[in-house]
Amino acid sequence: MPYIAQDARTKFDTPLKHAAKQVYEKKELTYCIYKLGVEVLKDLKTNYANLSMIKSAMNDAADEWLITKMVPHDKREKKLNGDVE
Image 1 (cartoon, helix red, strand yellow):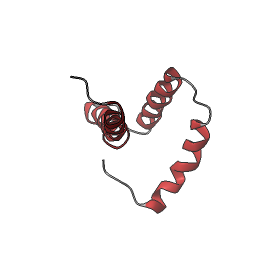
Image 2 (cartoon, one colour):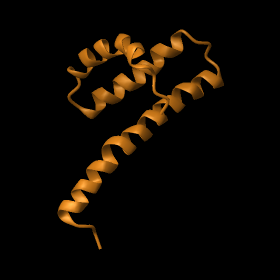
Image 3 (spheres, rainbow, N blue to C red):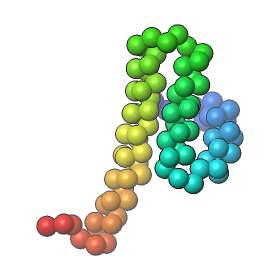
Image 4 (cartoon, helix red, strand yellow):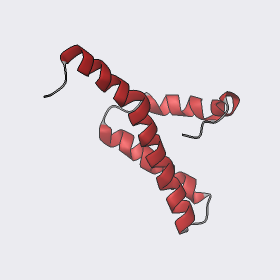
């Protein structure tokens, strides 16, 4: 994932933390992610390159979630409970 500098994150962190406190279900999170893409596209030309850029960013975030959150969790659970044989 292309990381952005710590000081550049500040403008995103506060509104994202506020929004996150209002998400309780998968459908709400899905809506927020989709709506963010829609809002970003409003300031861009609607063409394949920009549509693909937004989709790629969503996929990259999903990949980062898998790598940094889900895989370590799975490894801990596997160590605790054993692997499926």
